[in-house]
Amino acid sequence: MVKLYVEGGGDAAILKSACREGFSKFLGKAGLAGRMPRVVACGSRADAYDSFCTALRSGESAMLLVDSEAPMLAAAQPGDASQPEDRKRWQPWLHLKQRKGDDWDKPAASEDLQCHLMVQCMEAWLIADRETLKKFFGQGFKENALPSTPNGIESIGKQQIYGALATATRDCKTKSAYGKGEHSFKLLALINPAKVKESSPWARRFIETLQTRA
Image 1 (cartoon, rainbow, N blue to C red):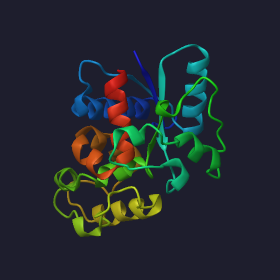
Image 2 (cartoon, rainbow, N blue to C red):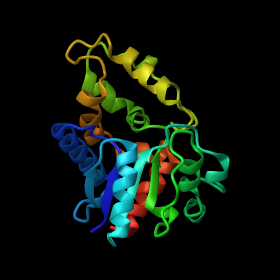
Image 3 (spheres, rainbow, N blue to C red):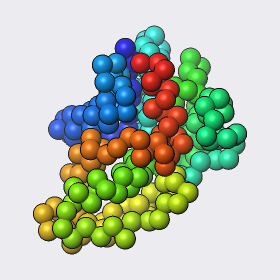
Image 4 (cartoon, rainbow, N blue to C red):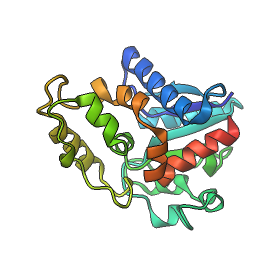
């Protein structure tokens, strides 16, 4: 069984459980029901990387999933984003090595297809499915506060997404304003993976790689 080491869940056991459940339900709807990876909620991105490296040294079948935190380097995503063969040549480890704040080395025993990125953060996946957001937050939700995504979700910065979600949800009648701990993993469990794949080439790469390796 593949172990998927993910960024998310903080330090609290209840949030780690919510993180595991959210990713598991999302991946089940993405076509992995019956052959699910074991989701390991690691808290911080650094802890996810460290846990992934430890798993590799132990001989485990492992994959890593973290936020890119920034726009992708052109050098890390060469070729046509729509073509599966080109996606195999993308270099997420190059992005994580060069991004200020990470400087992560590619583990000697790993390959690029074991490393996956939520570009530029997990909340980008949420805004790919506006219908689910609207239904979840209900009366008072301001869909027009969300950024336009004609070219997909990956070009939208993390702080812009967080600000848009706060504005879109601050006047909701039955839910509080968006909070990462309170809402993110509940929404992850509800959104449509097909919409995320359509709007994010890196999400498509992640899901399709899992489908071939699980």
